[in-house]
Length: 489
Image (cartoon, rainbow, N blue to C red; front, side):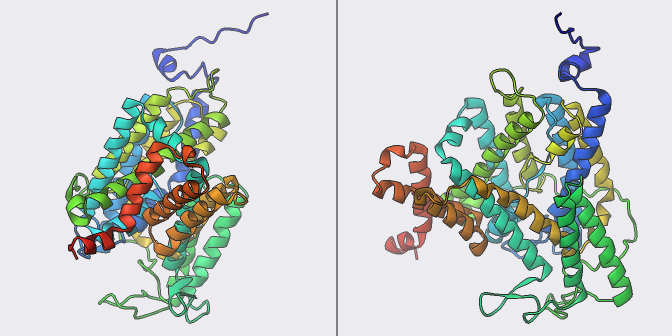
């Protein structure tokens, strides 16, 4: 007896392949809700990264010197872009993937690019990167670049970014501070003050929730830790860490925000960041070579994150086609590329596909309808941006540490017994956090890999694109002696 034919109930059903994939509207709505609550932390976390870093002129994103205003604007724009782009992914990609500002990518923009140029220049680089990726997708070259980079170096980049995010979280929380030697533990070598206590408790709460695979663990951790911080502040009246002049007036005080109930919970979103980008200003600010390498660094992360995420989600949801291909893969890549450029145009950093979408698939989501639900919830969330001004670093930093751990789990794919790949991978991983630069970590890994291949007699294993990129990084590292040689400095 043959299996019954699954007939779509409507054109909407046919477009999203709801019946064909064995799903229901109820499953899609439930999956969309779970995905939102699993990754809604980005509306809080992205503003604490993008909104608190200063550019070369000492200004926050949007050209303001008011950190609270910057954070509020980034929160609203982050929610807006996540909503619109996730809906676009659902409608065009027809796949249960949600999109939002990429962690790691936002750290690169905030801590590597912005200090060297204006925020508008930095976001212009993100827009260019998105356009380049889109062109590579449309021309079929994206897969060529993907093949060129050794697989284990790709994993090393993710691990390095994870450690980078972790050290940012530890520094923000005050667990790690500059000192002699290079860094010190807590305040004068001790865990002093209520804010550090709140961070430690928040880290343990979040770790337990993640270990128990609780849906929305990171978001729950941020909310719970913030509530604890508000209670502590109400009882102990801790106060801010910095004084009115920006100096450290109270070493055991709160970082960034003092956790108090805001005057209002709902407000009209301030979307003043939209369109604040300068497409080619970075080339003048840091030079053509450095700008091109920065674009490549952004592009590299976007490339592999999306491909790996899409493949992993399709596998988990049993959605791979008979030939092993991901359904609507080109459409997924096109939307993801548009998201990268759109994130830069909105001054919230490159937007990318989120692996947290797996939580929605685990709840039964199989189509883009789930993404329509998730996107709609993000649009609602942008009206609650005042809530982010309540959250101190100590309440948000546990999330950074846990996200760093999740990214570092990729280290299991690296064979450190093979020194030809182990040494470049190690340099990539270690130099990112120690230099506070993703670009330097990637460059060190690529150059060392090229040199080792050359002097072990394996030149034929080097893809021509790796020659081009590695030599570009070599020139980047040698820029100072080159400038001295030619009398520029």
